[in-house]
Amino acid sequence: MGRTLALDYGSARCGVAVSDPTGVLARPLDPVLAPAATPGFRALLRLIDELEVDRVVIGLPLSLRGGDSDQTREVRAFAARLSKALEHRRSGPPVELYDERFTTRLAARDGPGARAAEDSRAAAHLLSSWLAAQP
Image 1: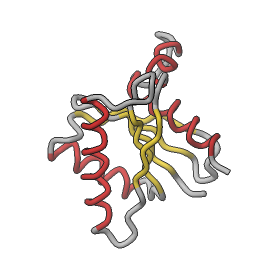
Image 2 (image 1 turned 30 degrees about the vertical axis):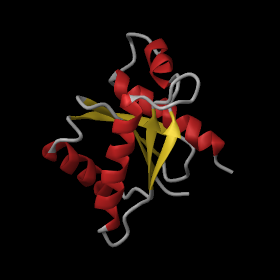
Image 3 (image 1 turned 45 degrees about the horizontal axis):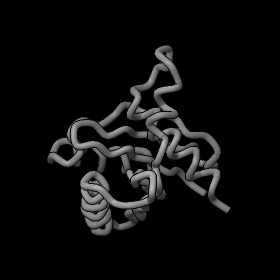
């Protein structure tokens, strides 16, 4: 399957998690600050290269009824920008959107003893859900 990178996008902080190469485990990483700004965006691109990611999954914050909001539209625009930047690379991984409803609540339930930032724990929950849904 290869490594998958999951992003829990927020304009101030972007939670990050990566799978192991077999696609079984999800591990939270340090969040990236201001991912839409040039330094944050470059940090994400470097991370994708360093981890040799085969796919990027970005959490799509749909409403409980499955509709779009301002945040959903912002995430879609960020995903399109990242996808375009990766297309220009020799073997840029595809970018996929995945329903992230409830991942932040799950991350909050991990409790105060959890080591990773809540944003990145949410990305790890997103990634675990995405991995479980794969055939």
